[in-house]
Amino acid sequence: DIQMTQSPSSLSASVGDRVTITCRASQSISSYLNWYQQKPGKAPKLLIYVASSLQSGVPSRFSGSGSGTDFTLTISSLQPEDFATYYCQQSYSAPPTFGQGTKVEIK
Amino acid sequence: QVQLQQSGPGLVKPSQTLSLTCAISGDSVSSNSVAWNWIRQSPSRGLEWLGRTYYRSKWYNDYAVSLKSRITINPDTSKNQFSLQLNSVTPEDTAVYYCARDRRFENDYWGQGTLVTVSS
Image (tube, rainbow over all chains, first blue to last red; front, side, top):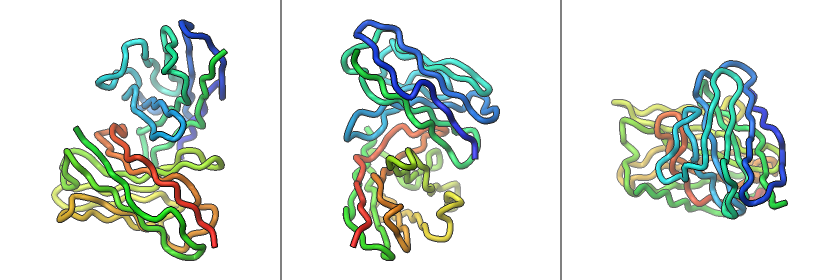
């Protein structure tokens, strides 16, 4: 199985900050990388698919980049509703696998 | 707008069978362009893909290797839903279980989640 490693595991940031989360795959996954946001007690929500495509309805302050093994999720200006846990997921090969998550907390 | 509504018991005894159902509205379980997944989440394992069912002129299933001997995912076209059965459960199977639509390479719609506790 392909291992997905996110960093950092958690971070503290203020409203308005630029936030970057990274995800590394144990082997090349081309651009088959998705990002999800999860709030407590809720299902994950798709933000970005195939590395850089913004899911419909998701604010443009979210962006994704990368290919191969290294990927980045960027929030350009953190908003109060963005405090949550973020997960990457590879869909290059079965089984699809997720990172361990990055919790974004209020500073 | 696609909606997925999960149902099933929240408590299962060890060695018994976990059964959950995911009712689909706004799409068809028989769609040729998507797949229907079960995913679970626990503090020890994180998010874990369990398996999927999909229709491409005939029905296919894929399962996580670690669960292959215990898991069954079935479509029900008459009710436009799909189900998960996990046999011989242990406390390690305690988790929040989600159903999700796999649009092509990503899960774009999710059920609300069901916390299933395995305990006597």
